[in-house]
Length: 299
Image (cartoon, rainbow, N blue to C red; front, top):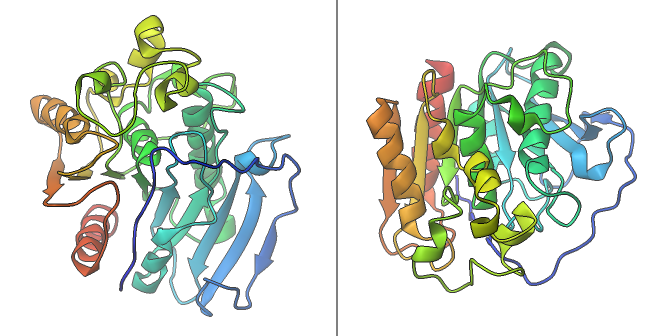
């Protein structure tokens, strides 16, 4: 298997996401980017009355019986990106079901809308597991950059109701069983202290757009958005990977999460990828991810 994971923290052009949704379609035939033996359900709206920005795709290998599910959450500085670029598709070859989700971007709604959508998507996927044919009790998440931030929040903040925003439908658990966080931000107040090729403060920064203002002026919301804030008991296993030459999200952001997980006695693996910038891939990374999800979701 070979893939390239390039998920930019800040993107130059943002395509406005259409707000009209299409009916969910189950497609047993081959589609571009989907293996022939995989059943695809696309553009499924996961919240009542939601649109394209609250939709997801599900891919289930036909030959697998009740496989675990891996959910991919895209990056893009919380201002862009799409479920349509889904590097987790590779895992269908290893008998995992895979989903990829959209969430409201910061131009549509400020935090906690983004994590509230991710939590709603996990609840939808868990409650419809029998319908799609995977194991709703074995859900892992993988995110890159801003998506890494969101999967880390899913891992540490399952019991934090403030992260549900206006979503009142919380009867189903949004807890996940494994988290793969690739070069995700954590402490939006601390990120300003470290070298980077982008400005992390000011009204045009990704953090300010996410929070609706500079983190220094929205400290309570920045703390709510920090996965480290919520570390307690019952934290799922974490795989953290971050390039040691990342020019956009400082390596220290993942080191802060590593240190907090270690202090809490959580199960985690931390990898600083030598020479890597903001995005990396290849067979060794593939194998690391597959080994992690096999260990945490299949064993």
